[in-house]
Image (tube, rainbow, N blue to C red; front, side):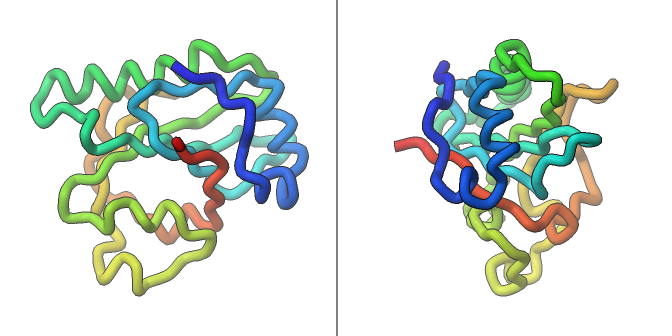
Length: 154
């Protein structure tokens, strides 16, 4: 478990209020997270949308171990969060036929990265707002841009 103290500089430069909220809110991540990506930004009337990219080597290949780890990853962040602004987080992982999640490192939508696989080419696990499990279908990555990588491991 790691509480992130230092975010990538672009966060403070482009979204200073979101940067402040993430610093004071005690954004804490599980050891299986390799990158944190922010979708959109943060408005006072909204939440903060974060994707927690899972390190492929840490993801168990079979159930129920896989969903147990993903649930633990999300609980680690949610249980430590201390802010009046809610987090909307998802654990995101490569399903093997993906771009290696490079698409979550792009600031703006780029069709050339996804090579025609713009729907359901990665896995998502959520445990919020009455939902607990895998988001099974219909995820269109182009709808969540712009994105900003705010932290990377090592």
